[in-house]
Length: 107
Ligand code: H2B
Image: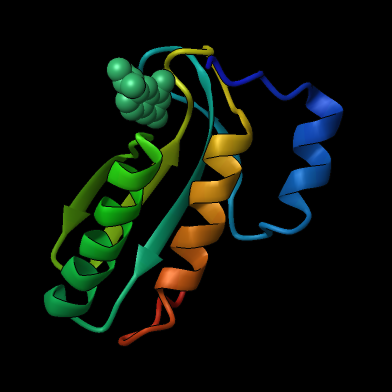
């Protein structure tokens, strides 16, 4: 089932519970939400990415991200819908929770 795009008011309301995420335009020109994470070291960053990757597979919903040593930049956007949907918010909340296991994210 195709997820429904959030309108501007819905996205504003949703981002109140995701204060470290900001609206961005993706490389593909879609609206997305982004958070830059910083960890103690590469091991902590990669552990975070592993946890998020497993959830992304379960949801069949995948991040656009990059990693340099202890930093991970995560952008979430729903390709099929052309912008931000509830699936992106779900994965964003999971990302926030996934920082706390070990080597917690700082930014
Ligand atoms: N991830 C994201 N971020 N957006 C999508 O629209 C998307 C996805 N679609 N992962 C899924 C895979 C789709 O391509 C498959 C066929 O279900």
